[in-house]
Length: 336
Ligand SMILES: O=C(O)CCC(=O)C(=O)O
Ligand SMILES: [Fe+2]
Image (cartoon, rainbow, N blue to C red; front, side):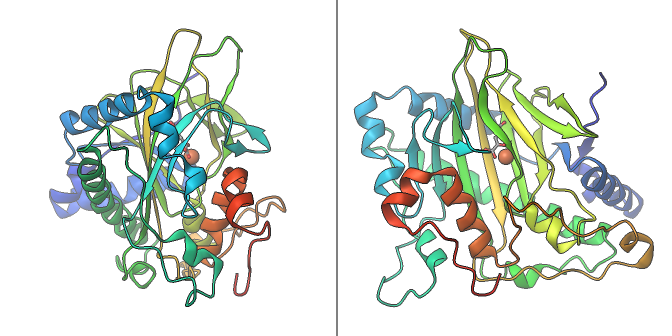
């Protein structure tokens, strides 16, 4: 079956006006039809990509004691290591190990925080055995933010909006989240590496190693997202689906475990709006608006305009152990 996933070259953004317009049109079409695309010529070198995957390998190769020291269960901010089968997606346990970081910030003073999502803000946990990991990953996160901000502007233009149409939702800095991931091999035919889901933010950039496993749902069928060296796999998240009133698609995707004896490593970068923002619904011109049927409504996964609540909803659902330790089970929904 032929892959429906288009390949876009970001170089076109910097060439002639015609090339730029062409890129914006291709981007708009990919984001609308599939919600997934490969991005090439994004300015991040293959060497840097390889180094991030090497860091993932080095981290997951640490002994259990070292990994337990930075386990997510110690962090109300959902940072650090989670072992196989601790994460829940679509109600089932994922067979993957992860290491999660977000912006490196001090935790907010509990006596002045009113809203639950304010507790997402805080410091990361870093393993003392890998002293260069902090600088490397925070730097990586900054670089991927730059690429994602350019894509967000181009996407706004593809919707016939000013490039800065969503700037108010990120003017204090977007909410960023980076994961290193290890999918161990499995003898099951379709083992759940991560179950089918949509990403909660604006955009996600995934770096894959040479092993396939990522799959995307397109026209009710699942397609493999084959590895493509040097490219990022980009997908549209729920906040863009909301902002475009369902014109752009936050597409379902999942990862199937590699076969026995194979280990797959990846890294995902998620960019959302700032946590205190409310995502506006952009006013599309009639020729686009007629295809905007409203965001998907799923009673098990309500999309919340309030960014902090939407992010918190996803974190609580994915990490019930962390959630049970630090939070009530209800998503606070004062101004969803
Ligand atoms: O590992 C991958 O290829 C994708 C992971 C993913 O979809 C996620 O963590 O949200
Ligand atoms: Fe995802």
